[in-house]
Amino acid sequence: MRRDPIGAVASVNNTAALTLKMTYNSSTNLFSTPPTTLPSVRIRGTQHFYWEPKRADKAGRPIQGEPPASGTTQYWTQGSLVLSGGTNNTQVNTGLGYPWRSYLFMLVRSSGTRANGELDWPDPMLGLKFEANMLYSQYQRTLWNRQMGQDYGYVGQNINQTTPADTRIADVAAVGTAGTAVIPGLETGVKVANWNKDFAFGKPGSETRRTYLVTSPGSNWVFNGSLANAGTLYSVVNYVAPSGGNKGDTASLTGGQ
Image (tube, rainbow, N blue to C red):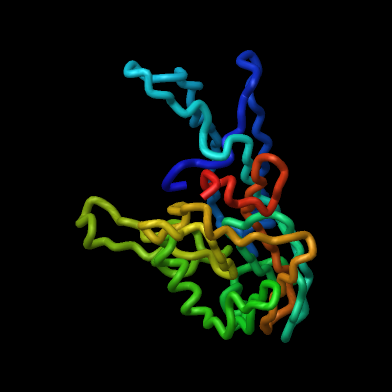
């Protein structure tokens, strides 16, 4: 987040370390034609944390002892749907029941590749419908890509599974003869909708937490678009579980205002 963080996890035992479990995929699953040379992977982590402050400063003024909305947690969860080629009008259930910060879609052709993900993606997207409202309607693919490029800074060419990262658009003039400046591009077949950029900078993470999309377990969330080829539509949602167990209480995330 670009403002006050939310979703901090408390460590109540100073003798025990928090454990992070993560996996990464094999090159044969990531690439339709794996590059001849693959880099080695090294994963390291560090904590970004705070200490519990004193109750008051030197002037006796009280200091807030907890982060905003203490006890609230952020989650990422993934779901998938197998879709046919042609028009699909399908209910998506991943993450329903919580306030959403962002929702991502990734389309993988049934052969297991995303190399032609942009051509397979609906153009235009007929609609993303939430309850009785069309959040996206007749949304052109290039316009969606343009918006994502502005939001996240990925303004280079689209990158697919067969394109190594070092072949992305390079601005040689920016660095002269010392090297090349790589301009990151969007991943093919990946689209994102977000509700966390309502503050001053207009960028994801610059948020007041007042515009999260509040959902319920029975919400109507429909993907409607025509796919060029059959494939699997993966959905990844970043949602917030407010402290106190009230999943629809976003006012608690903003200090009750």
